[in-house]
Amino acid sequence: MSAATQAGAVKKKKKKYQGRIYVDRERCKGCGFCVEFCPFGALELETDYNAKGYHPPFLAHEDKCNGCDLCGLYCPDFAIFSEKIRVED
Ligand code: SF4
Ligand code: SF4
Image (cartoon, rainbow, N blue to C red):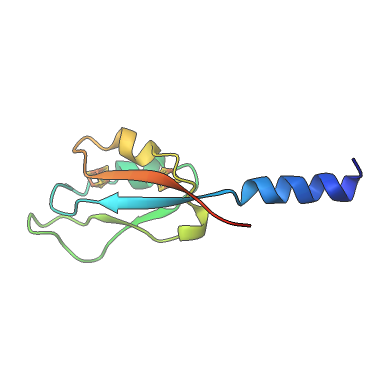
């Protein structure tokens, strides 16, 4: 396989999945663990408040999320989870 073909194969593989985030805003207590532990810096906390007075997270950088669900694993309140969405190249 040529170098150019290999580079194309790597690029194609990288775009195979996109992450999607689901946030239950009212369960969130704004601790920021999900933001801190996201390995790609894809999340930020909203400036708006939920009913309890906390800032829930949102997917600020959609292109960076791959749906790994580390945010869901670290959330102590089960307020966020993700899924991998297969995307077409
Ligand atoms: S699914 Fe992974 S990449 Fe996406 S926001 Fe959560 S921790 Fe970050
Ligand atoms: S880890 Fe959970 S409770 Fe903490 S800010 Fe993120 S979604 Fe909210």
